[in-house]
Image 1 (tube, helix red, strand yellow):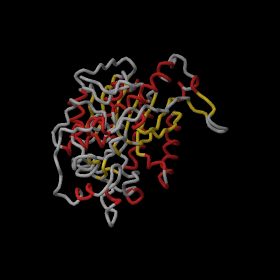
Image 2: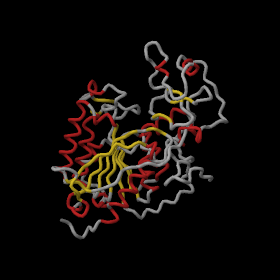
Image 3: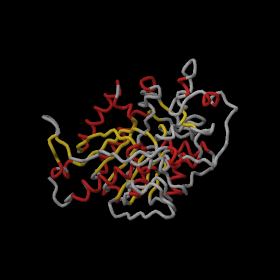
Image 4: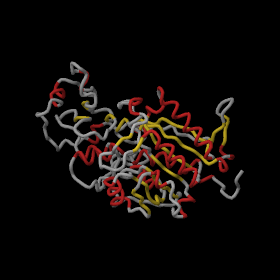
Length: 366
């Protein structure tokens, strides 16, 4: 495999077949695991991912096919957290990972209009109230007591009335025995050709935290960690597939490709501002956030078509030989759009390992 971006800590272009997963940095269990983007990232960083909890049968099918987990629980987290037969290994985790569904807080969604309402996922599993799932995840952390907890969500959870949820998240983690802090990170500066901003809540168990604590301000003490990333930006032209000359001329959306410039949204030319989720990629910048929606998104800057599978995979840093359970563009886009890019999580996991876990003396708890 030829790796073009050797100046980055992790290559965005990689394969499962040739990856070296050392599994020597600690153990991880993933909730709301989707197809395994986070899990693949932990593996790249050297962690041993024991398994997952997921509600979507299609997602856990893809997860199992690619990650071969020791444990895979297909059930709502409300049921999973109440199990009395969980494997003993899950009570001795280094990291509990989770990405609670976040559409209720997305700036692109209905936000407050959807809060408190049950939602059905596309595969027909049980209805759930999405904005309470984060607290089910905290309940699980309280039960398992891992050393570190990492929870990913959309940036929109930090704004407007959603800030009340963040305050409660902090309160509940505190009750569960964790120091909590959050970081807004952009994958474009972490070795991925995609501008994907996400907030990561990172908690350390209080009895392990004393050697790492620092005074943040007059009232706040937190474990010190550096989560600033500034890797060189990977332009879309580096991953663009020039061999795919497919042209899309038969939709109302495609008409706007002709009249917008590179880096512009189609909505900028629509009289009513429609097609906000469509844009023409700029060759010298990372692409916009890849969403799970079908039929919309970033279009090639030189060829009138949406990003194809190979481009979606590369700008999401998924392995080139990942089994998506289907070859259709919609299958690939849905899965990568729902997942944390593996390289993004690998970067975070490395910082956790290097700055915290490798320096913990778990025999001395204060």
